[in-house]
Length: 342
Image (cartoon, rainbow, N blue to C red; front, side):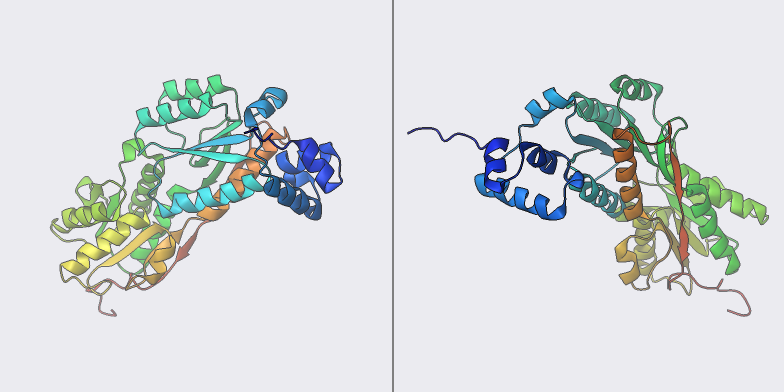
């Protein structure tokens, strides 16, 4: 049986009655082609079973049309939202996202970045700016653009939010409600600069009001709901018991609320709970979770746009974009129970 030959750009161009150059642009840089032409070329290519030879393209162009991203975990609604928006924007411009996760392990992050670099990615995207110098040396050796998200190191492109301010906003909201004894359940600060910044913001806001945040009222946990429950149990064992708890990410705050409710502690009547992130599910809890909105989708969109500008060699040596954050007041926070006006 004779082997069927693979369709080529020449075949697609002939079927579309257009030039080979137009077909090539439509398949590699779709943003440069009129929508009607792009739709026609893609339809013909699909009907012919055309699959681009990325290795051949990389040899000619010096690029793989891939972008590597390393995130702490894939088990996170906020990272999922960011990745989804990045993929949508990059795919529309002819790039494929290669994703790796490292579970907050610095050595695993270095291994993941090494793998992405070995695949010849055209750019790298990472979360945070704190990592060992050996990992920075690895990134430098790749000689590709680097975009940092949430937190960052100067000298590289950054799409940031003010995590310090996010923590301070959460603390201030509780103090405005009369709470003076506030606990925190957070991720492990030594390996997570976003969590460290949020806790520092909480501590500084409390300090400015003449309040302390002793270490006994900070519980560091793995960032998931179950660990949030463990953290809640830990800080509720302190005497006097806190009247409010800040989950430095929503997943932990949800666990805090579930644990409190399981113990018969009414939220917010007897205990106020606030998170940081504003993941979708928080609006549908009972009670709905008060939180600080971190614009995860926009982080992804801005990161993708920054990647494209850098690959087009368009823009300054490095960019730094700080996105706004907002307090979202719902029903999980209320006045300090012992106030006379509560």
